[in-house]
Length: 173
Length: 313
Image 1: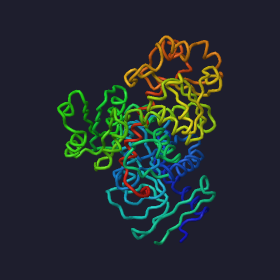
Image 2: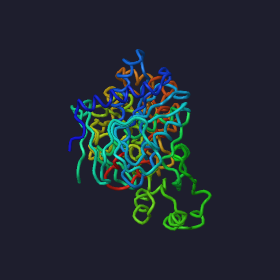
Image 3: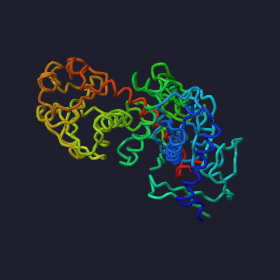
Image 4: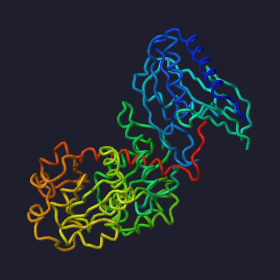
């Protein structure tokens, strides 16, 4: 089932960017960090939109949380993607960006991983899809779309950078 | 591709994709070592044993630091100070270690196949840190990591391995790994230490050292292993240096971009000229740095579960 097409994804990201701008008046202190893999594309796009809103460059980085997850041993070891944070996060408002918020365990791992790079002033969370079923006390600050799901269903997010088109689908199992 | 192996026993049984998975994973772990905080919690609560029945310093220290950087606990078990000296069998030693609920046993042994033997009855993961003259998989993986980092690829490169091939587990593991990834491997050294039978592994054998150096993109030098040679394989170290040592005169024959590797410990003035060992063309010190990253990757990968990779959420 189609949840978002390309145009709807663009609108959702534009709205999230404006909400980020509204919440963070000190724009020079904001840095976006995308969680590998989908979050990285989203963080880059949000940074582009925010650059236009704020009329200054916006810091963006990428974070792989594979070394900080709590489920190594339950699955095959994850394929590691680059972590690139070319700025000091200490004192910054870091906005973690991910494509799908589900159990919250990736976000927990991302916050732990971020700790190794410094001490952000605060961390906010932006996600394209919140599908519920949280297993940890974690809540997104910015949500593209809330999608009620069954635990066994899958959310598939496709990105033009990787898959040639932007699309979010709910896969019934 | 998902890594589904519980053990790392040799390179021979790995696919090219599995080797690339280790190299890619090691790249991520190398970045960890370059941060202010060089430690990640990936193996929190796991226990690693360094079971070194044959002495080793650099490999043991490399695994020890790798385990610590992954937040695992590590204990060192060396043959000199152990129950093995009192007559305990290897199997009993390993079973006793396992009774302490260790998760990974990193093993160095003078007998080829010793880690394979342990892996057949232990629940713990076994990592081969060198077994006799058979294999030294993490050394080959770190060598390939270093080559790929410097040259951007493995496929199509000419790699010359020069020195004591016969007694070298490093050579065997390197030959498997390099040929699987499409490099052309040439072996060179004294005929007594480089028998033609190695051609069956898919590499070339030559006794013309100038030619072997001239064609190489990578020259991997091996130490003359006095401890593994039961009888004299060449007349003297001086003669070895004259005939096969990497001297400045010989290096002048090499391609301008040819790089030099050595698994260490180096014998300055024997297999390698001292100045060459310290030159910008030498990757010897970088190999040590990369060895740590590769061993972190291997400890991490064997700690993963079976089946497909998890869906991040």
